[in-house]
Length: 288
Image (tube, rainbow, N blue to C red; front, side):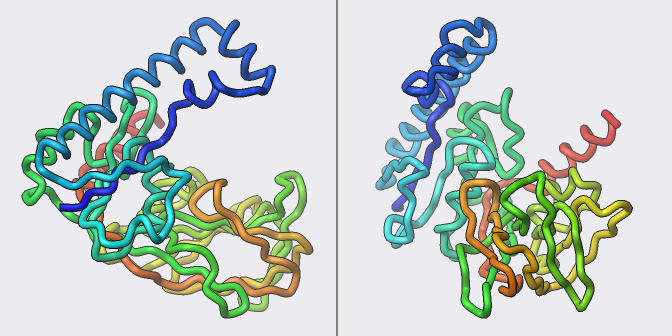
């Protein structure tokens, strides 16, 4: 079995090497907050060691990659992908994973990360992996973006935002002959319906084999959620951008250009996501 392990660097690794004087001051003077960052680093390192040793002892052929080094070339011919981090690491990796390759998310620091897409944490991984064939699997629908008819970006697992790159500026666009002026238009898949768009007040969609997309107009009072298997939006913003699955990946959508969203290739995820979702929603509702 060829396994690709994708990891993230801890905040401690990034901050301790930063040349930003504000970051350096934080690490030196912030006491408890800085200590928390270092503690998280050690927890993540321990998770990494547990997961890689488990895979190697199983006889798997293991490749280890920092998430910024991902490409379509390195994900070719693998049998399994394992991400070590949180949902951000999982989402970045999902952009390069073919639909026939299963993926496992491992939450490297569950005390500080929700890890909704994670199947287990680092200490649970040996037992989880030993029963791999018995673990639940979900086929999650991903979306595809096209700009003026040309496929743009990778398959989208969670959400895509169209907005003005300046968050204080107005976003202008047209959908179905209706013009909008607001903070941007947010679209989500079923998997992403308990992420950003959920915090905007939208209801979750059923997970498996669900090709429905949600649309929410941000900054419009009493805005309703609409659902469809495809959406089309024309930018009326001079320097608009689309943001895919977070802030790391974006593309320009200039005035007059059209964004089309449709269903893309699915993703096979190992882990009981329905249970994770139910636990999350129960906890969320109990705190309301």
